[in-house]
Image (cartoon, rainbow over all chains, first blue to last red; front, side):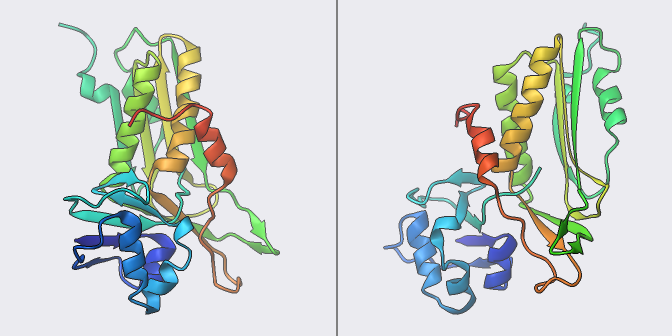
Amino acid sequence: MKVLYFAWLRERVGVPEEEVEVPAEVRTVSELAAFLRAKGGGHAHAFDNPAVVRAALDRKHVKPDAPLGAAREIAFFPPMTGG
Amino acid sequence: MSDSPPADDLFGVRVQAEDFDAAAEIAALAQGRTDIGAVVTFSGLCRADVKDGLPLAALHLEHYPGMAEAEMERILYEARTRWPLSGGRVVHRFGRIVPGENIVLVVTASPHRGAAFAAAEFLMDWLKTSAPFWKKEERPGAADDGAWVEAKDADDDAALRWGSPSA
């Protein structure tokens, strides 16, 4: 699955995107965040407070309990500050 | 045949690095039209704020290409379902923007002013909380040489007072 990071999550992880092999037992957005956090290093730093991380599946906002389903792309980012 | 431009020209969103010209956007929207009684424009500019005595040198706007446009389209469509709009434009810039420069533009047109005012405010409120853009400060002399702008609860409250957009 293609995983994208924006703003300070991108800076902490160290790359804007990566291809991640998602294990079968990882079924939801929050489970994927926990899986990525467990990689340690920059990933652990990026997800050290999962409550402030937002996500989009195939470019649509989703809640943490959303199933990954057949989505091809997921993005993690902080609350938006445009406008 | 109608004298109005094709429907696709009446509503649109753009994400771009370059500046925009609010007057030109209004002209493009209203050109050749006689059904528009009100045009409201909102321009968001980069403000020269000072934190701990250090002035802001610039904002760096990051966005999620593809999703940013999609969200702006979705919000604009939502506005069209709520108010009788004759046209609408939303333009958001990305990249390095210095104080005094434009960041975002919303233009709404309708037969009467009430809808144009309300829709413009709705569009800005929802843009701020759901369009995937992030601002980083460039503040020379700061400990980290700049920080990511934090989202404000007040912005969420402003968006929520309109009720949730239909998914």
